[in-house]
Image (cartoon, rainbow, N blue to C red):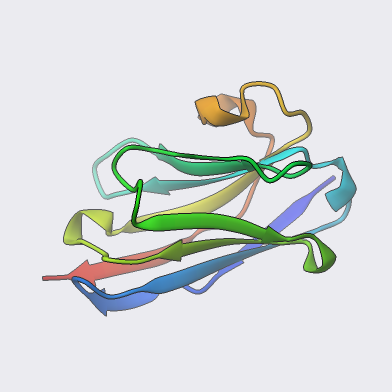
Length: 126
């Protein structure tokens, strides 16, 4: 069983930056892939970025490529999402998620991820 806890959300103006954190507990060594998802009001949840925990390879959705960076600190069992050049369209509830195998990690399909955090709100004002 893996538990995930996000933190670091907040309100910023367009062009600003935030860094989200997600700490894993329970059985973090069973995690092979972690991802960040977001859900804006009235929209479906979408995948933002993912990382293979063993080798550190990453994937980004086109909408955040070049602005967001996913990273991990394995010693702290913590996943990060550094978000720069934020836009109002980035406003959403951000979730971290984990899966126990590496297959299709970069497909960022919601149904593939078995563990989820409670979400942290990011609000970007123009």
